[in-house]
Amino acid sequence: MLKNNRTLWFVPLCFALLAAACGGDDSGPMGPTTSQPRLTGDWTGSFEGQLISSDQMSTNLQQGEGQHGERTNVDGTWSATVRLPPVPGAPTEVELTGTARGNAEGATVELSFTIDGFRDYFPEGCAIDLTGTFDATTLSGTWTTNDMCQPPAVDQGTITLMRQ
Image (tube, rainbow, N blue to C red; front, side, top):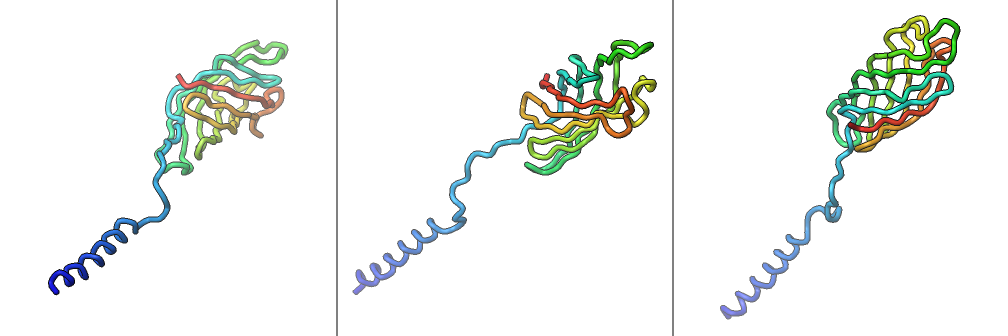
């Protein structure tokens, strides 16, 4: 009788242990996590429009902290040697600088590059607004001058920057 009593306890115990081992979260195995590239760092490259362009643009960006895919703030500075359309009395190239501000979410970014200086051509508040995507090495997209810009500084085009 003692042997039967042990068997009666042993069999349910095995089933209970088996059920406990199989229970829990049924979402399946966790796959590898991928970290989203960040914009923080130095970028150089070019932007091209029909009227204004530069093959010597550089920017230093700082991206705020956030969870994966969460919208975060981006701030920085930029500079570029910009080629201008031929306008009587205006230089053919100017060195421009300014601030960069915007947001990043996942691998998309919206930035506004303010233009500080050369007010004869770029009035106060004039900026280049970028909508683009980025990965670990490249930031690219399309841009347009904002509503504060006046002709002949009204333009749009493409931009490609590489991480340094």
